[in-house]
Length: 110
Image 1 (cartoon, helix red, strand yellow):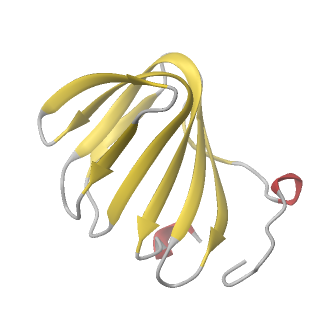
Image 2 (cartoon, rainbow, N blue to C red; image 1 turned 180 degrees about the vertical axis):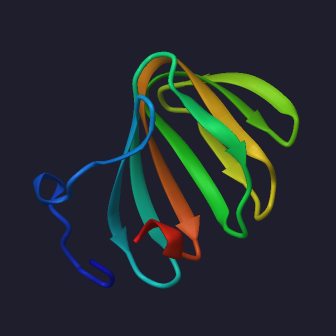
């Protein structure tokens, strides 16, 4: 789907990436990628890092995020900036959806 101008949600199959977590890779090109992550309550986004800058937008739900050793509770409307190689992860406190934007795109997701 790289460089596709129109990406229709119902055509993108969710991929299970962890217990209680699914991912849909949406529109992207080599420089930018949009990804939707759906979490069940109690699901964990394990601590990790990658060489991409990432912005996360909370669509719905409540999450405890850890970024570079600092933990905060976030909910619908909140955003987080994770610069390249910073360690981050989350625990879903209330079922929800996150939108991640990556620069450059995550080749490991396709």
